[in-house]
Length: 81
Image 1 (cartoon, one colour):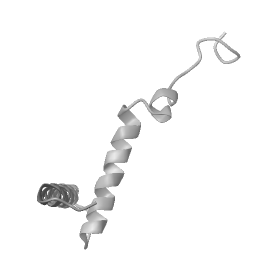
Image 2: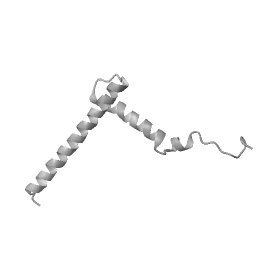
Image 3: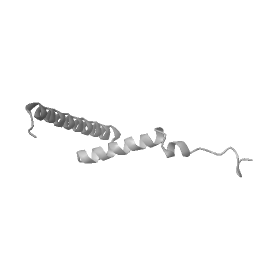
Image 4: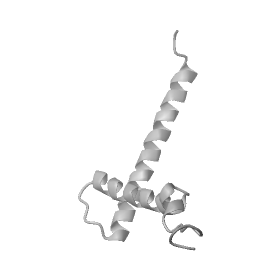
């Protein structure tokens, strides 16, 4: 099956969009590292710091088992007659 010009242009547009998204994610990560005072030397380190923050926030707020379980106390049982 031969690629048409339209198919090639669609592929190029998708690659450009993917690269743009990756670049904006890296910029967000670096800005977060600067604001948080993180001692990072590479974009990869900044991205790791940013990812850790996002995961921590998600665990605390998105209904994960940690957010639902920690702090829950049974109202009946041996400890609460």
